Image 1 (tube, rainbow, N blue to C red):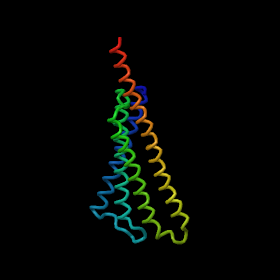
Image 2: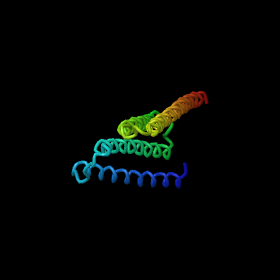
Image 3: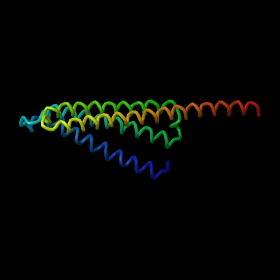
Image 4: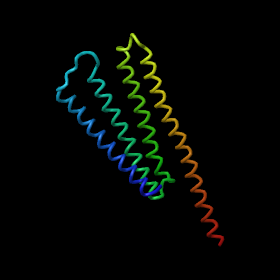
Length: 163
């Protein structure tokens, strides 16, 4: 991965992380201060809490991607230490799916006239879980690459002993 790519990705990660922290702080402030009363049409407090949790899941994924980029830059991504961050990303995606399903459940009573919206939202939650499965497959590929790297290092050591 080139220096320009790493810098661009880190810049994007910083902007997104800063933005999510700001939005999260504003939502917590709205909850704590009570400055935005609910009008009864939607359970805003519940939606705010769920949104804060969803943003937290996204932040976990952002930090894990940052750490993986650092490992790629150092050339240490094909090690067992990388699995911790990949597992963090998978967990964050699953958490985001659960958050989305809770948003769907909170929104469902207001969609009695048009249940298709709830079905579409449920489908989006399943798609989010599909992304977690894709990352799980990529984790398995990383495991194979780490195993191959370890085996290559072992064979190189044996070859060095012979020579």
